[in-house]
Length: 492
Image (cartoon, rainbow, N blue to C red; front, side):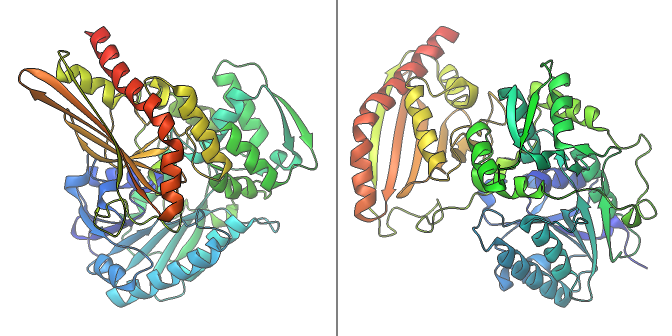
């Protein structure tokens, strides 16, 4: 007999990602013994469940790290993707999955649970083909693999939903490739988590592939029209053209939506396939549908929109790590790692209370903007998108509160000491590494604000870049500091 769920240890990989972060919270709520594997523990320290799990820092590409992570584990959730790592992402994914399975077998793992993508169409994209091959590699050993294949996931913060939302909002008339009329089988993130959670309670290991989808099969164009209706928008005019390739479509999506081209490309490429669940691969005999039923598309969209409106977005697609340029080391590299350190240091003393100053600092970015010179920040975001970076449109998870590890426009929150210190790491494409830091303190009864832009240039090119943009710094950073104080004073 297999051990009861409360006596098992569960490993969740990809815990800093969109699905992984929500699954951790779900299983922690059930008081299960959870271990997570992440490359950088700072990415999850801001999560409310961080103190309730065992954090194993390591890479799935490193065998010794996997051995540490998988030792003593009963069920391992494989939620890793490598689609941002260039043209050879499929080879990377296959190699990672094969090694994971081999180490899991040696460690005595009983069950692997893998979330992949529906891949029943003969005309399959490279992305979906890689997802299927990952499942095959995970199943290459004696460890039982439960592979759940899902279609488009609808939920607040998912890349697919953000793409749908922004395309529909911003383009009342759009030219689209004819394959947006292909059938797809969307599923709500709530229901994906229902199946993943249920897999933790299986009495015996299951070794099989299952397709999971919501109650409706419809086209991507249908979903856009449903979204428009639910959002109070007029019907969208969709003009089908035969020449808009997935590559061109992804560039277009990269310009219109917050989803960068590198991530849009595999998502768009998947639309060339009919992504519909196969009834022969039904999971109902193993995990029955929830008593209240699966959410249909309209209910899933409404739920996602309500989460966004009430600022209850738990995780976002941008929470996962982005592929960094090859010269960029970990952001925590010390200043003595053989690099020059360039700084723009600003300081201001004010009578405005420190808590009001901090409230403005923590609200920086997103819809609130960057306290002046927003056109320059916007321009830098456009340049970044042009070179394949994340750009400025990722926004924020919450308009007022930050947590360590989450994305903020083209920055990531690296350190946060609420009320005192905020340190942002730049994820824009740069010839080096950059941070923006704010510190708030009380000195002699007054509030002291320190603002620093820190840059570690890569070689001569990096230094030339710093001095080329320095004239903009003399305008941007003093304006930012001055307006932080101004808005804090106005809020009082």
